[in-house]
Length: 303
Image (cartoon, rainbow, N blue to C red; front, side):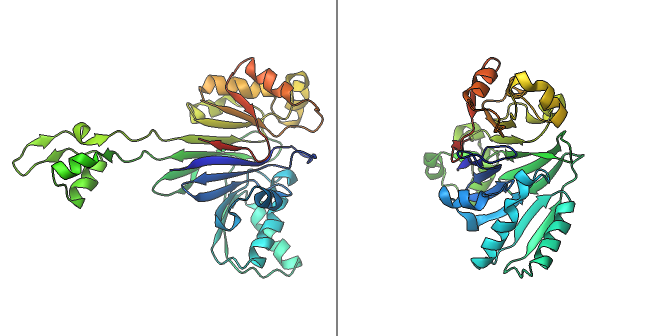
């Protein structure tokens, strides 16, 4: 089962010649989820050969332009391409009215329906759930209402050893029960422990997305032991006063969150264009958390 994140944009506020504005594409078992949609997102989707037509869920963290301006063009292009499937958008309630006004003023008749899901940025909640995955939202601290997202796999079923299926001549009902953790009882009444019949499933994986925000110790219990944490690092620690003033984080602060929460890997992004030497972000974070990488546009990270 695939579970990966492709970084489509890693700059903050202003695009640069190397970095577009914020957008991440999550691929979970060939189902595609877009997080934020900064200006140029649809270009990046094409540039990195992503399956744009198969994006059925878009999550917007907050209503600052560098996280949402690309949404209008993307929706328009999907309609021009003749999309029919429902597009689910999860965002602050104000965006629903903004979209309605946009379509009205630009005389837009979409070829597909949009289903809007309101996010309450003051609470943690499950936004999406299926048999394999849960997507949670949780509050962040920015200048306007802002939310982070947790993509959390559900515990997988046990894998039955093929030789056991043949040896005990297992039927479909038996197989389903065993995959769900049950022991097997033979026709003679003998109990065969599940551990002898199965191979333990791969541990479920978790991806956490923390965008524009002051660092918050309150998120640590929510993200403990996450496999991958993306955390904004708009500023270096030398500009920590500016980070506090603008409700952003530094690379050092992000690394401290990763270390305290015992995550397995940290990705830094959302870099201010004021810095010309981005390797300094990595140097700063590695003082605290070694397994840190810098986001690059087009980077694909397997979870």
